[in-house]
Length: 70
Image (cartoon, rainbow, N blue to C red; front, side):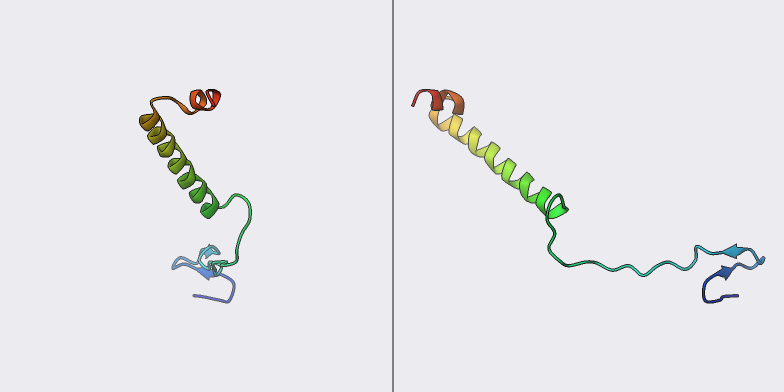
């Protein structure tokens, strides 16, 4: 037996969790800490780390050592 705001099961007990609210996805741009920003920052960090390893492999010295010898 259903009504507008609640549902009862076969034994007549109230089941007011049966009607779920409608969900929607917000497509507007977001600022601050969100999934897109965190994913982008992680990718840039990986690129920087690999670049630093490649620099050290090519020059034979670390970045700090190279900068202090300029």
